[in-house]
Amino acid sequence: MFETIKADIKSVRERDPAVKSDLEVFFLYPSFKAIRAYRRAHKWYLKKHYFIARWISQRALHKTGIEIHPGATIGKGLFIDHGSGVVIGETTEIGDNCTIYQGVTLGGTGKDTGKRHPTLGNNVMVGSGARVLGPFKVGDNSKIAANAVVLSEVPPNSTAVGVPARIVKRDGQKVENYDLDQIHIPDPVSQALCSMLGKIEKLQAQVDELKKQNEDKAE
Image 1 (spheres, rainbow, N blue to C red):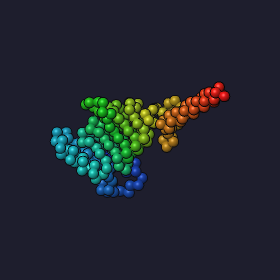
Image 2 (image 1 turned 135 degrees about the horizontal axis):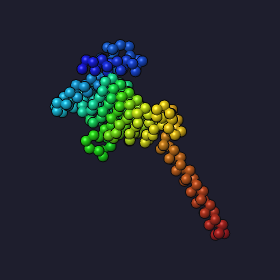
Image 3 (image 1 turned 45 degrees about the vertical axis):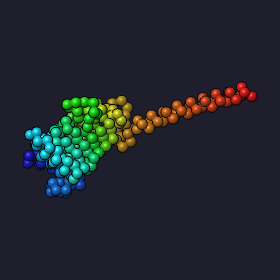
């Protein structure tokens, strides 16, 4: 347990330049408090003391805004940056040295039973607001862009962006011709709306032409 706590503190210090000391992480970081509470709750969960486990996790949720189900399996060195709105489901598995930003959901789709939530490999980064939904794996060293919605497996060493998410980079090479700028990711909804507006304008022009022809015939 002590070694795991040291690894969790080290992960925060390595990935957050604002940290000044180990004590600051231990006493003041809500993400560290949430993970520490999870590790206590998980021990009770494994002993089938489910009520106590959920009681611990719910207290941590109210204090930190981070919801980690005690049934989840989390490796060493998880860093939850800021953390508000993070939800980690019961059958989620997270490898070592992963990074999760605020607003992330590691959840289910409601269609699966048993294993319902995703598995993250080692060194995975999930950007703020992303949704990873379903019982599939996100491979080692992969990145999920901010606000992406991931509904299927992500290979190792890959970058996934968009709604639904697409693999745009794998093993250091671009896949297709997508821009990897995570801030200016193309919005598929706005693209679809633009396409629809173009079709509506074309149809309106055809209607106007038919009206004009009918008026000419009436004269």
